[in-house]
Length: 350
Ligand code: SF4
Image (tube, rainbow, N blue to C red):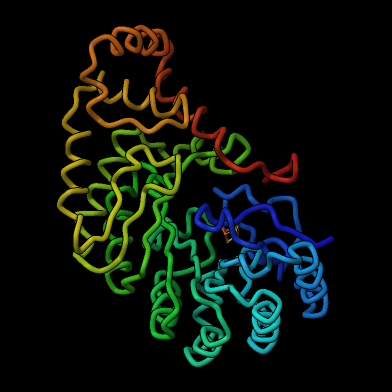
């Protein structure tokens, strides 16, 4: 028997999951259901080693085939560096074929770790860190109660890059709403240009029905964006990013409308802008049809699907039905998107 946490990045779907801490030490972000209703705790090195022993027993005979591991939960690097080094060394001893060990970390935690500590962790096997930055805008970070500043994001990210550890920064188009959309895109790009992470992973915002952000919608301080507006925001973001080595990725998250907008910025920035513009140049009806097709299933479609007359004849009446309610189409799309979010572990998320 061994413990496992509730989430891991999609890119770690086939990794060994090693729970080093439980839940999230911050847990206050108002958009994030993942750990609501849970309490953070650190696990002792002995507890984690016992789990690793049990995993090694379970994988007896094929431990040598396990190539990647992910350290859970939301901010593993809050542990003392010495404890993490002991855990990494033990993990590699029991699973000698591991060539990738990764973890989530908060920007504030990475800012507190010295580059030297991070270099030691890299030497011990930590090869990639995933960071939820969400936005580069101070106003947006405050509104969503992220508990980090733009300065934390830049210093923390640069520490990881200087230590030679691969860095994934996660960003959230739409989370600033209409009011902050432009600032959100430009400030996010400005910070990413300073950090030059290995990966920029796009996580299009969707609102959970229980999220405290619903109250911001009611009092008018958060104005939700349409699919078209979010695509325009992503276009401004990509336009504002340097042609750098960072890999801009929409492909690994199904809430991203245009998942094929994906590639290294120094190779594919022009292509990505062209695809975003192709969507933005469609008629309102075509954009709605594309959006409805994408949100109604996990299928990906080329933008050209909207030029298929037979298909459009089936989709348009559905859009017209939804449009009979005020803002009915957009509300329906938002409901479909919210189904893909993790559930909070409480009925009283406030
Ligand atoms: S987004 Fe990350 S830091 Fe914020 S509550 Fe969720 S897990 Fe914790």
